Amino acid sequence: MELQRLRPPSFAGNVLSLMKHHVSKWENHNQFDLRPKLLGRRLFWKQPMLERRTFFRSNGGLIYCSYSSEKDQNLQLSDARVIYSVAPAMGHNKESHPESHLRVPAIVSALEKMELTSKFRGSEIIELQNFKPASVDDIASVHARAYVSGLEKAMDRASQQGIIFIEGSGPTYATATTFQESLFAAGAGIALIDSVVAASKIHPDPPMGFALIRPPGHHAIPKGPMGFCVFGNVAIAARYAQRVHGLKRVFIIDFDVHHGNGTNDAFYDDPDIFFLSTHQDGSYPGTGKFDEVGHGDGEGTTLNLPLPGGSGDITMRTVFDEVIVPCAQRFKPDIILVSAGYDAHVLDPLASLQFTTGTYYMLAANIKQLAEDLCGGRCVFFLEGGYNLNSLSYSVADSFRAFLGEPSKALEFDNPDILYEEPSAKVKQAIQRIKHIHSL
Ligand SMILES: [Zn+2]
Image 1 (spheres, helix red, strand yellow):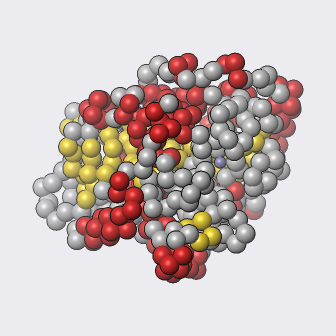
Image 2: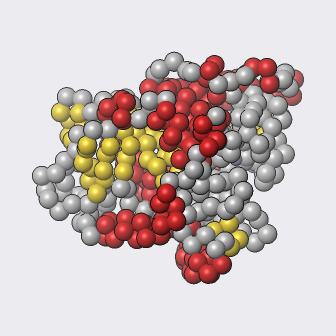
């Protein structure tokens, strides 16, 4: 398979200087905010800007966000069905670590091969480029400032030593570029929130957002890094959507095979952010039991559904219909954010659920529909896990097809012969139990 032979882009070694250039480019611009105006089905953004951040310039299917002082600049974003951002963190890498710098390039390469980029689709699929890194204040809406400044200071040590471990005895590493690249990952998600929210003000069917970013975020706890995760990208975006766009109620779906303990902890007592996680029972980090339902004012707005090993497509379809939909309907969100982990795939090396590429297509299509039904179509996916580069790439590509409303091509990739029977009795029990606990 060609994807397995992917190599990181040649700029890997020069990522620091590139990033310095990138950052200084940002610093040289003035600030703008979004002012969407409707012209047919096209979006035009005009300054002046009030608080932050983005001015868009369109060039075919690429959208460049940049600051500019010229008042007459605006954007055309017509007929987009998918808008995505890419933050591959090429300098954040450790030899033979599963959370590698090959992951995002593998996805981007697959999207190109499968003709799911603007090159082939024009403005139907748009890549958001030159977005700004998240600010320390953005990060501090979820994480302790002491952690953020401590990580920044640790970059000197990482420069000297190459790789350092930043999670006590845990598996989370850092390199000299980790701090800055993690800010870009969070910023890539925030920029998509801006775009999707602005588009939703124009028409009821805005593009779906997908942040192709790393390092992942859902294990990172408010006080520090954890489980390959540095900053809680989805949690930071949730706070941003509330603060900047006034979207009070945020519904977060986390279908990564592991429990999103960091997101769980960040909003455990918050009644306005619903966190729903499905994960493999007993997998890392061991949290996310049925009875972890939130605390204080937030009691009932955290739902954890541990699934028995071997659970797959049939299970997840049932979970979607019987748990996710009624939960979201009752909560009435203003936006849906998704911690999209592709490590529940049957081919993934880190766990033992049996999702298929078709399962991920189903989830993407159904979540898009849910967002249209409940919150004006506002929805952004954030890449979390997924460590088999082939199943990761194909599944993200099929998620794009679901966003486009095109048929799945999962059958070209999935091999039913490797699947075994799902533990249906245990699954039924788990679903009954969670429905009982949450009165669904
Ligand atoms: Zn995971």
